[in-house]
Image 1 (tube, rainbow, N blue to C red):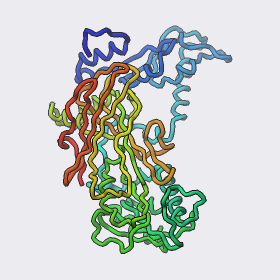
Image 2: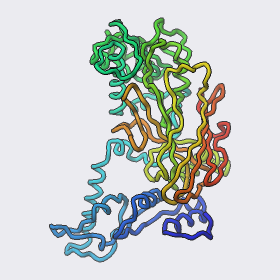
Image 3: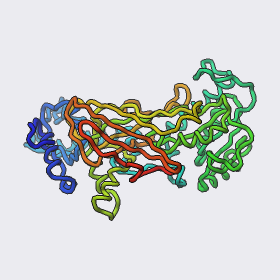
Image 4: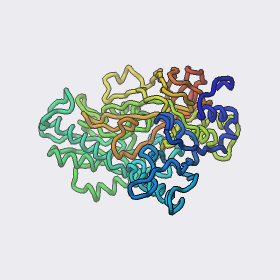
Amino acid sequence: MSIGKVISSPWHWWSQLICLAGPTVCDALGLLLEVPLNLPSEAIINRWLSEPVCCLSLSTDLFTTNSKGYPVLSQAHQKINSQVLITGQSHHERGLAVYQQYVNWIWKCTVEGKSLYEKHSRGLEDQLQEPLQPLQDNLSSATYGVFEMDPYKYKAYEEAIYLALLDRSGNSKSSQCANIPVVDAATSIVYILGAGQGPFVDASLQASKRSGCPIRIYVIEKNPNALLTLKRRIQTDWQGKDVHLVPGDMRQLPHPPLEKADIFVSELLGSFGDNELSPECLDGAQHMLKDDGISIPASYTSYVAPLQSLRIHLEASRCGGGVRGPDRIQKQLETPYVIRLSNFQLLAPPERAFTFKHPRSDLSTKPNTRYCCLTFTPTEDGTIHGFAGYFDSVLYGKITLSIHPQRHSLNMLSWFPMVFPLTSAVQVRALQKITFHIWRCASARNVWYEWAITEPAVSMIHNSAGSAYKMGL
């Protein structure tokens, strides 16, 4: 931001101070905001709450007296959720303690009213996590256990499998997808690709029971840790069921099943949809799916939005343990992270980036590399610290999963957004165009993202050639 420009609000004063101070000093700065009687617009409040606000100052003059003689705040003031410092003279005979009790009551109501997603992720807010790479790394039982706490995802998969079985058997009253061929009452072959500890086997068996459609399940998994659990469950939980374990990488099984699948069931999705290499995995397995077979999920789409969050920018700057220096900081600011976003603001709504569909008819002609250029128009002045990434997925028919902020699946816990940082923060004015470029690149061994902005300023291409972060094939 140019120091000579007209500074039009306290937020602009703060923004200019941040630019002048630099990251080392900014790391030690926090805000105490005095709350006025007449609150500004929701957009301006949200912009402030994306800054490192340590405390809000509430004057006793903001309180009114209710019918029982106790001080209360307006509905609008009650929604501002932060630590509070009460100032001014008491207007109540019991002194300032009654104001404190009221504020504590608001805080308790706020905590109790939080969604399951918010309660589940408490303590993880704004923590930078490296995205999982289950294709390259073998996940632990503890990690699988966290995933299996999700109350929405497995129910959605069960419903998708149930509807797919009904459509294939011809028992559905209203088919969920066009051009699904009806088969006879023979057993449907279901492949669970990347079975983990078996929750999708449970979902498939339950869907079969509900639909009355018999199934044979082939459980495909490469992780030795998960294979031990799956072997035990075949002997116990699934004893007597038509469930068969096939160890190995789904892309090149040493001993594949002799019969092809009617239905693929997989959950290889990451916070940005394709970042756990679902396209490469499902493409590699597609030769085991019948020509008229179904994939669950059928498609997934990623989305991007410009992000303002000084806290995340500073956290990324100091990542890397004891290793310091400009080169290390540069690498950390060119690495995508998975983050439970809390202290942030989106400067514009998310826009669609990449879409992948399965099964593919163009498997031999179209690679999984991608490029898109997205434009955004913020309604308020702000600072771009990076870009937030989201995804949604069509499992089958109308059954979906989504972490898109405008349509997040209720109580779904399995994914936090992804963040693509910028090495340098960029100031943007209201209605000024933001142009963002993102590439999905690939080599024989790796996949990686590169990203840059060209408006309102031109940045470097981040993570060029996967120099800071890549996903192993």
